[in-house]
Amino acid sequence: MREFTPLKILIFLGSCLVVMALISAVFPENGIRVTEKFVIKFPTLTSIFNEEEEKTDISSITAIKTEDELKADSIRLDKINADKVELDSTVKLLSGIQYGPDGNGALDKFFSALHKVKNSPESIRILHYGDSQIEGDRITAYLRLKLQFRFGGKGTGFISPMPVAESVGITNTWSENWDRYNIFNVKDKRVAHSNFGPAAGFCRFRNYWPSNDSMHEEQSAWLKVKTFKTAGENILGYNKVKMHYAGGRDKTIVEFYENGELKQTDTLAKGGFNNIQQYPLSAGPGEFELKFKGKDSPDIYGFSLEGDGGVMVDNFGLRGSLGLFYNRMNLTHLKQFYDNMHVKLIILQFGGNALPGLEDEQDCTWYTNAFKAQVNSIKKIAPDASILIIGPADMSVKEGTKYVTHPMLETVRDQLKQVAFDTNSAFFDMYACMGGKNSMVSWVEAGIAAKDYIHFSPSGSRKIAVLLYQALLSDYNTYLQTASY
Image (cartoon, rainbow, N blue to C red):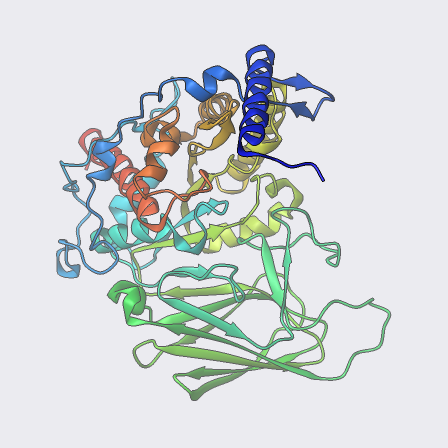
């Protein structure tokens, strides 16, 4: 048996290092492309021994204080007004909201509605659509809190019966026979129609079956929503629950329980794709439950937890979505929702999920052209609403031994900005607000972004929310100076 002495082992390891160094010296920096999708890469000597790159300075962002924003605010409910908003002068914006050459009034419809809401018995809605970057009410929760304290409004707004990630201070539970049906990634093949509602999805307690089948046996199901004190007084202050649904093939009996006490029994409408069943609350919200019994299930689009008047801010965190689902939906049906909900601002925060599949400018153009088609459709069904497009956050990929900004991110950002300008929408450059190129590395090191170098941490989400709120309300103040009020 051959004996391996320490000297032989040392010579072997040294030889391996020499060979690896020679390979690193001659290996192409961009790798060797085997196929269109497959590239062989090897660390170069430059990437191994190069001095550490200069880090993006995000000191103005880490200095933002966010400790109390989910529990308290300096503006109390008895001081609600719609005049100039006093903003935190210590918050420094690296990039504000941008408008096209002819689009300085892109948010005027929203700003006008915001100013008038204090004198209106009806609430106005802000719909915040996005991918996993906003799920679980991240970013949206802060906007809701600040806007409701300033302009009035109670409740968390629209929630799914079966959320993938729950809203702040709210827990959902359900019987095991419920299932989700979505369209925001691909259309669920079990669904023959395209009426998916404002959340691009709905829930049922039994699957569809062919229309020529005989009616099934009666089945029961339940849904329960519990609100906790940690949600804050605005969320806890809702006084009614609106259930949005499409009727099934047969009647459905629903019992509504408030804090364990039966309050109302109803028979849901048979058929119809935009029905609302409202349940007033007699006590302070804590828990409500709905018990269903029927031979078919209605399509439950969601529940809206509301107060009277003010601002409602709905969070639609659609995990994995590219934001290209609107034109797959029945837009006439979606328009009915938007009209009934008095939607005045639609925020579209997409692009991050597209980046991993984009390799060149042509790919980026395909995506942003498809996104532009969605925006144009939204503007047709919601002509009285303003649209704010939020560009993707910085996303890092590993290059050698370092994390750097995705090579197509700035191209997508620039093209989405042009989409905003072409459609008379506003644009918020989240990438620039974070600090620009390679800023995600600094966010991760500061503990305000996750180590996947893609998502914000909870504290990072709140800091971005502060920056977005500051940018939005700063422009609102400017609007008040030029409007004739």
